[in-house]
Length: 72
Image (cartoon, rainbow, N blue to C red; front, side, top):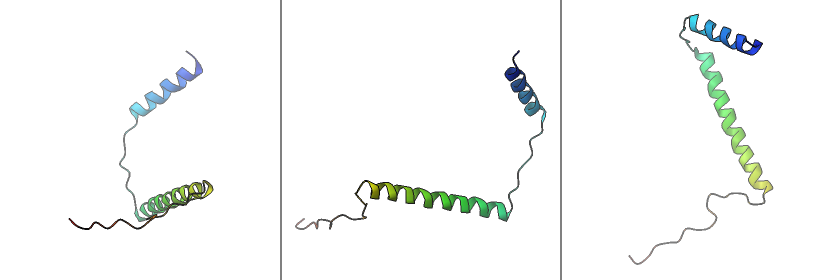
């Protein structure tokens, strides 16, 4: 057996014998998770905006006025 195979077998054996414990999140952990999610959303939004700006086509919510339907 190679060293990698021995290490992998040892890891599998150790995980098989360990008991699973429930993880309880407190308020500080929940706050950290929410802040990380907010940071990722803001960073992704800035990345997309920067790429659109670099491409020379900033995105607008409405590029023109919507056509009005008349005479139904």
